[in-house]
Amino acid sequence: MRRGLARGWSVALVGVTGQLVSIEADIGPGLPKFSLLGLPDAALNESRDRVRAAVLNSGEAWPDHKVTVSMSPADLPKRGSRFDLALAAVVLAAFGEVPAEGLADRVLLGELGLDGGLRPLRGVLPAVSAAVRGGIKRVVVPEPNAEEAALVDDVEVIGIRSLAQLLAFLRGEEIPDAPPVPGVEPTAVPGPAEVLDLIDVRGQAEARRALEVAAAGGHHLLLHGAPGSGKTMLASRLPGLLPRLEGRRALEVSEIHSVAGLLHPGAPLVERPPYCQPHHSASLAAMVGGGAAKDLRPGAASVAHHGVLFLDEVAEFKPSVLDALRQPLESGEVVLSRSGVTARFPAHFLLVMAANPCPCGSPSGPRSCTCSSEARRRYAARLSGPLLDRIDIQVMVDRPSRHELVNAPDGEGTEVVADRVALARERAAHRLRNTPWELNTQVSARALRTRFAPATDAMALVETALDRGALSARGLAKVLRLAWTLTDLAGRERPGLDEVGQALALRAGAGGGWA
Image (cartoon, rainbow, N blue to C red; front, side, top):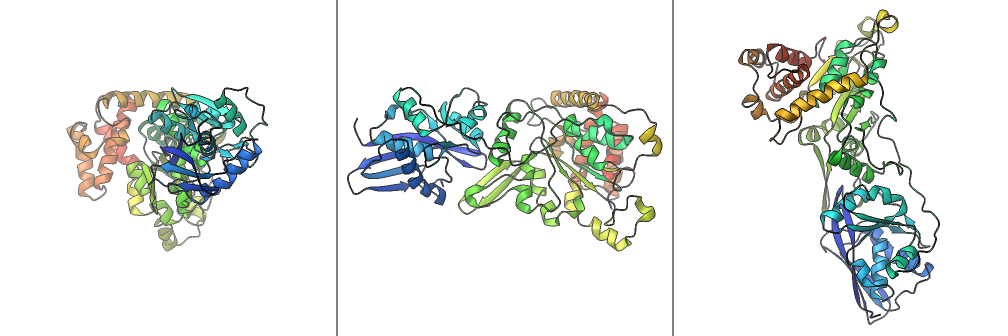
């Protein structure tokens, strides 16, 4: 075969956004040397020795000439070891060891070991999605990533275990056997292993109603009350009230979890709304994402995309970490900027916060509280006004009585409430058809004042609250969105006095607002 030039394809990832990378190899005269061009990082530069060792240990010849590899777009930073497999195949094609035609319409992804074996990767799902968007519908990935890659529609996936298997496939030869590639277990599970039933909650009628409203409209929620009152139990049952993830939503969440290393190898498609509960010691990077420019990872806000982000003991979080959530709460995404790179992570989540009324956290409430009024004020001030203004619902969670714990009949289970939530969402989706919105919480303030305005007499309540300074402009929009959700749950056509009144009570915190 002629020795000279060959080209193949791989994908570079920035956050969860992929871009096709063309890899060209030229074998020319000169002293043996391997030059890698196109803004490679340190890990990619190291691949020169790793790829050469993998080729030799796979029983192949390495070019004893000058090898120049160019990766384009040349101004796009290339990071990590995901290009190893493509680099090896393109160099061997340029050297005439494998047909170059087999690389023309395939994307190759995989990290090579020195023995020529493949290692599984994070971020295969968004990389394959990027390949299909770029017009290439045939991909080669490490065997443990094959099921994940196959989640993308209209793509032909080949899962392999080693470089030798790829070369045999390209040559049309019998595929040799190779040791299985060990999968990578997820580093953490971002939610309950199973759907928890609301029937386990005893009493708590107001809090249960607040969960239903939050699930139906996508409204953010603050639960405050004494320790042991059931705040965590309530929050952990909220994902079960949300609809299962389907279509593009399921793929979006799966792509984020793939980049974060959270996908289970045997179940790569995330179909249940995620539930993420970071510890109150979480750093800014853990909450909204971060890391070095070469390895930007999503934080809890993005892991909870299309699900629930629960912050227990929220007043114990650093104020700077809490305030960092203000931007994703408004825009639905986290934007991370580092030197030479900007990554965007989707972050449409339902925020639930739980707080004790004071630092001492007395389980008996105010009767045995030892905190001074100044200590309570400072504790409440840890949640900034701008953050609280973005919370739709505040609920005081009282400890259930002895009768509710022992003798009261069971309340409704998750399945019953979830059916009502689904019906309310269907009504909202029907009303919002031909608009850019799907949920009440997404409707713009202008549309709430014009196209979706409540009844005239109902608006008198919010006008009074505005005159008293009890509502901000943002708070007004949130009350109207809540009123529409209550209207959908009740099966009515338009918010009236009752729905707006209930919305104001939920917004202000019936039973006592935070601080």
